[in-house]
Image 1 (cartoon, rainbow, N blue to C red):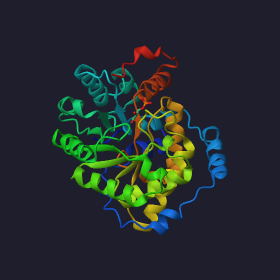
Image 2 (cartoon, rainbow, N blue to C red):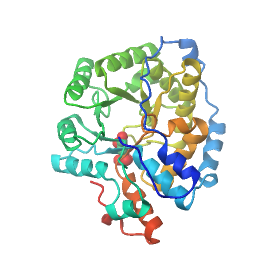
Image 3 (cartoon, helix red, strand yellow):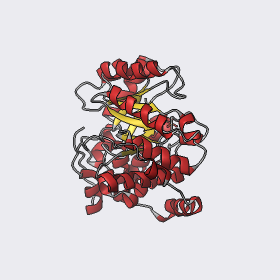
Image 4 (cartoon, helix red, strand yellow):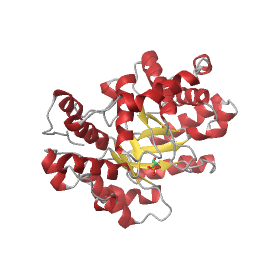
Amino acid sequence: MTGITTKTDGAASTALAQLPQVQTPRNPGTALDLDVVLSQRVNTSAVERRCATLPGRRTVKKDYQAAWLAKAISCIDLTTLAGDDTEGRVRRLCAKARQPVRADLLEALGLTGLTTGAVCVYHEMVPTAVDALKGSGIPVAAVSTGFPAGLSPFHLRLAEIGESVSAGAAEIDIVISRRHVLTGNWQALYDEMKAFREACGDARIKAILATGELGSLRNVARASMVCMMAGADFIKTSTGKESVNATLPVSLVMIRAIRAYHTATGVRVGYKPAGGISKAKDSLTYLALIKEELGDRWLQPDLFRFGASSLLGDIERQLEHHVTGAYSASWRHATG
Ligand SMILES: O=C[C@H](O)COP(=O)(O)O
């Protein structure tokens, strides 16, 4: 991905939009340390209190908001994961990933080089996406391992990863076995995650925890830690198919696990909230949370992504409002 430049005024907007595009080293993982895993505890009411104040307290306005929204776009894994996906739909999505905002709005904002962070599809659509994104530098992410339930035979889940990597996917979003978390079988979760990581080879691996199915925030914290110890490059909340997907409390717990892992190992693991994030305002809240809890280094696409199918359309509407002062109907902004 190329660097983003923007004409919007202000040091903060410049700092946000122009941090150098880098690629963090991969997470080599550690041995499974059950003492550390079992020491993960969550004060649920404190987490809820912190999250309740966040959306109202943190608002950015005018040019700063435009710069933050451009930042959000650069961190979107633009996603289509539907049973009726076609090559045509995936090609339209990829065109949108290459140019996420209408040309006249980009021109007015003085934005150049803006793309989404990746395009995320099912395995069958990987070759189409790879072809459509050729030369753009935008990676293709494939959901894998029997997504979304993760209940297909283990050897097939490993083979699926290999197939997607061979087809050109640079990122693999795996789903963990929720039952290993629900039964406290941390060794099984670690072994599974490690095997998935090995099957990925050079492709970056995102571990989808499906947090809405893990029963408690404590389980979310422990599963996050085990997946990072087993070498996850990213931890991701949800498939988008659970009845509860990304939430701020779950995000705070996962982000703090990432911070603890970084403190212990020096390794930066990425974070991807996914599922149900469709409003520009919500994207700003997530960016503020990351900035406050992890710092600016995590506000780069190599360490932060939104998994979202419809967020981009709302961000584009907000950017149009920023430029013209008027809101247009959502159908005027093609989202693929
Ligand atoms: O990983 C991405 C999610 O499946 C997208 O969910 P969404 O359609 O609710 O944005």
